[in-house]
Length: 106
Length: 120
Image 1: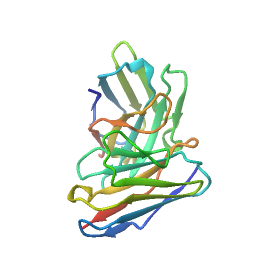
Image 2 (image 1 turned 30 degrees about the vertical axis):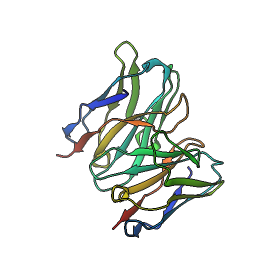
Image 3 (image 1 turned 90 degrees about the vertical axis):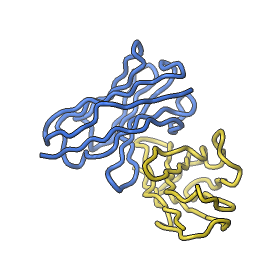
């Protein structure tokens, strides 16, 4: 099983600041890495697939990078609605697994 | 538009069974594989099970293998999760989810979730 480790667990920032979230895989997942956003009381929302491709409707301030075992989600300038929990997920093999999440808080 | 609506959650005693349903609309059901993903209260996301578009292949999280069965009824555009021998560790919100693209194994569309509470 591939273990995804997200860091930091919590990121305390202000609107307008840049957020950098990390996801590290226990073995290579190539570029098969997905990022989700989850706001309180809501289902997750897919932001980035295959490490760097923004899903339809996702604002350009969200970007993803990385390959192999090290990945980054960057939010260039935080908007109030971006304060949420972010998860990474790999689709390299079975079982599909998620990281533990990074909470972006004010 | 794409819609997934789960139902069937509730409070169930340990050792008992429950069947979840996920009614789908807005796209051609038989063309896509589906997943169940759960989230224990205050915890992260955990993939549970997947089924191929033609129903020929199923995958399960090890901890539910032999207890849970994922299935689909293309005539009803509905996905199911039969959960047997439930334990406290199965308490969670259960989401059904669809790949963005056929076979992409990412969760582009989600239902609103249904809460399963295993408690005596």
